[in-house]
Length: 320
Image 1: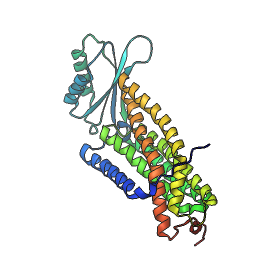
Image 2: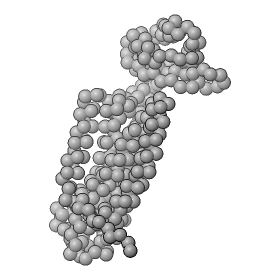
Image 3: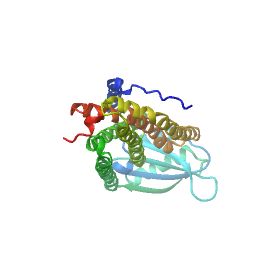
Image 4: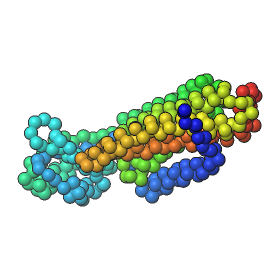
């Protein structure tokens, strides 16, 4: 015999879910004000100096030395140099006023580093100036892509789920998506990660994941609407639909989130910060996406439909 499904009363805790989300959004805003927002060189413009070296160097000492000479905050990244041999690479990234970084200062910095590490064969490979124009264009294009995708999703959901007031369902799905994007943004800010290309990649990944989870629940609501008695309340319809998809949603999310956690742990062990700035915010975004698909989008939709006087399954089928 099949085990009887336990219907959980999700809608009874609607206000609690919304309060939790409001607190999360306030934390993201507060984090921006308290910690500030670090924007990568590729978006705000600056200079990137690339060095090759052998052995080991203390990145903290390099940062202190470079900051003292350049009189501006710097970002240090290390890795393996391309080509044969055991040489490593190091980049020093910084922003400064136009014309303030001269060939003399560059030479002074290189000489100071070579003097600090005389046995490490430290050599300047290249110096690149990054203009903020291309970075802004990339940022704006990503925003336009996200906005266009949101509009298309609203239209698609409205047409596909006409039986459950499609337009309101589409808008609720986008509101839940914004909730998840804010969660990812807050993670970047509080964790001290730079807003860079990883940030845009995380947002676009969450966009697809979050909406897909929400549509699974919408699809179940639509199917149950056909099967349930017309006197069934909208809240019972939603509670049943979420309960039926709960196990599937949790299993899918646990699999995906576990993979990202493993990647994050490996990145911490290997000290690969470039991966951490992708995996950690994405993990938070995936958790938020699972939460919002069950506890935000359907709850807002219930509130919306009840405000329109559609409190039963039969009401949903009536055209205004």
